[in-house]
Amino acid sequence: MYISPEHIAATNKASVETLVGLANTQFASLARLSALNFNLAKSAFEEGGSHIKSLFGAKDAQELAALGATAAQPVLDKAITYTRGVYEIAAQTQAEMSKFAEAQASEFNNYIIGYLDKVAMNAPAGSDVAIAAVKSALAAANSAYDSISRVTKQASELAETNFAAATTVLKDAKKKAA
Image 1 (cartoon, rainbow, N blue to C red):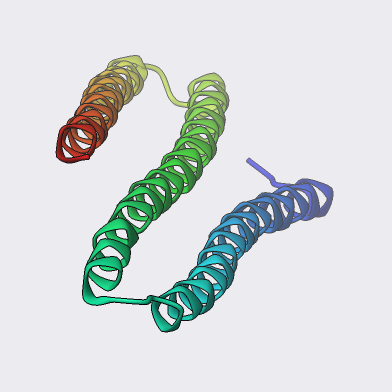
Image 2 (image 1 turned 180 degrees about the horizontal axis):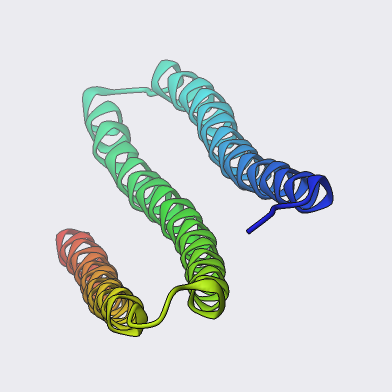
């Protein structure tokens, strides 16, 4: 069996394109996370400045205490929003990475099956059993990968549901406190 230089070049090109796509996914996630952090820092700075001005403008101790108490609510809202934003970025990145891994696994499986078919055509008589055993092992590995992938997706969905429930509980607690 001979592998042509064109085949090697095509495989290398596909690998580079895949890695560039993976890097672009990571950079896009980093850009979204950086933008989220920047916006949080900017709004915290602006709100902190306005809150300090309000504190200096307080006329008595009661007004000062009321300003201090009302400052906690926006901070809690910002924390919930920030946490949700980070979670969404992480979930989107994880989904994109899962698609990448699934595509790579599928491509690899197709390559191995094609290779085994070529080997079967050129193999000596009686080697059908060994090739069938390898194909069976590959099918079992694919089945295990599919099962693990499904369990991972279910765990991710459960975590998302729990995160949404925790966010709701925090918002409800905030409303009751107000």
